[in-house]
Length: 485
Ligand code: ADP
Image (cartoon, rainbow, N blue to C red):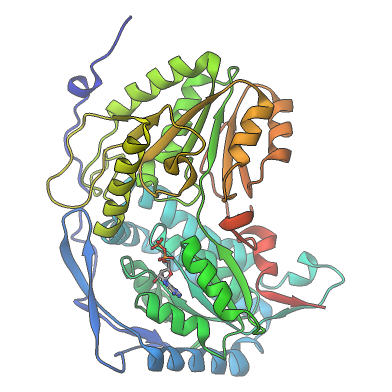
């Protein structure tokens, strides 16, 4: 059989993105009431580049007093300005923010990659354009809410507290801010502590857009800052994306209050390959689903189910393709798999690699070199995994794929649904009827057919079971920020 030595055959010259055009300040303060303000207690933390562990900037640590100030500014802006402004005017601000994001797209992409570790190809081609598209999309809805919800009286909720994770920093900020503003709410947003920089850049863009002061406030800090925001009595709605554990904590702490809540939590998506699937495309979809973006995607296709008849060929092609993946400097345009977001996350992934081996699954890793400095992980397969394995049941959030086989449609539906999560799934087959059968039976918020990890501002996204509730994106994303009669 012909076997290509991809490793020695496919060498690329480095193609590193320039960083000279970006502007990073040494220190970032809190964005409250349209201004950058020092935190009350004067505390800061460092945000680093996970691909080389170099310090990038000092970022303010907000405590309860700062959260109070931000919520107060958001409330005043809601009552005095934003809720009174004609909807078409609100839309104009969103369009302006979207255009400014496009103008600064290259700078935003480079900063996203430096602060979070994702390959520049991803931040340049996916994260930043999609983030701008969310503002464009929701800008269009601002003055059409009565058409979105005919015969209802859609009203804004008030002040929204929004907490986001580190895997899609700017995109998540856009997912949260754009629909909230389009529907007439004001916000206090807290980015993740390891990736605050693009949200702070967005704050600069918001200043430039002359959005009325206090409509968007961006405060930085870790879990305690998030908890202070969640527990603030003058918040009307919490929108959270992050881990299932923290989601449960938030749910508990706001129980009994009138605060509204949407949660987008973890996932353990099944990617299902049938014998009649286009195998080469499916292999590419599997790679895209779990390895690109370092598996740092809550909807990552981290469980692979292959129908027995094609298991050998799919696994062989998968291993071959894994050998071609380039792990390394995220700023290099050739890089497929960048840096793991933090030392903590790398430790979690390594812990699961050990658990998988101890449980008896067979480990395969590509043989590529990885940089000595920074946080990196080779793309990894676990073969012969079984339903009861922790690597099959628990979210790893890294480039680690657990592989199982199946014989019948009924069997794979049962196995795929046998998880506490239900965020997304993928199905690869030539038969439309099989796709429809599966999509109706999968307990997952999004099911991709013959593709994976595709996003669009117009389509709703969200989970079942421990993956959370509420939908973001599309028309559904509007209703999460509205009271309706
Ligand atoms: P991950 O494991 O993906 O880092 P987390 O759920 O810990 O996910 O973090 C997601 C976001 O939630 C981050 O912005 C983080 O600072 C914030 N966060 C962490 N703990 C809490 C908490 N107890 N209350 C509110 N927000 C929190």
